[in-house]
Image (tube, rainbow, N blue to C red; front, side, top):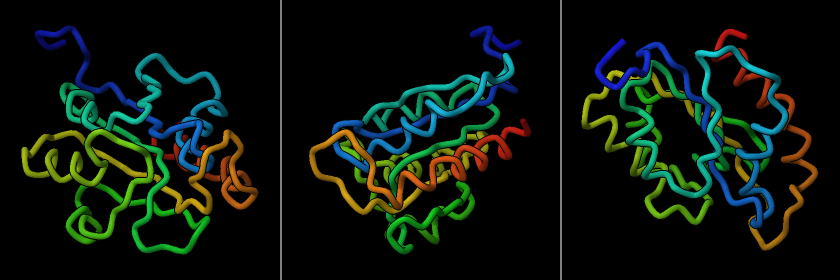
Length: 156
C-alpha cells in the first residue's frame, strides 16, 4: 500500500460520454453491460470530465477508457490503442463528448507527465451525436464487442 492506501495494482475502467447525446453515451452504455468485476477493478462513470482522467491515472496500475472517439476510423468502427501510440493518434483524436478538457488533451498531458499508468483506449466512431438517449443501431450493435474487449484488457 502507498500513502493514500490505494493499491498500485488497481485497474480502473472509465466510461466517458454524455448519455443525452445519442452515440456519445456509448462509454456509459458499455459500463452498464459489464458483469460484476473483481475487487481490484474500479468502474467509473466519467461523464464528460476528461480532465479527471489525470487524477484517475495517479496511483493506478492500468486504466481502460471507453468513449466515442474519432481517430480516423470508419463510423461504427472500434479502435483500440494505448498511451504509447498516442503520438500517432493525438492530432486526429476527436472525442465527441462535451468534455471540459478533451480526451486527446488529457492523454497527451498524461503522456508528457510520464505517469507510469498503462492506459488503453477502446473507442468507437459515432454516427449520431444529436440530442437523444438512444444509440444508433450500428453503435448499439458493437456494445457487446466493446465490453468483451474491456474484459480481455482486465483479464476477466
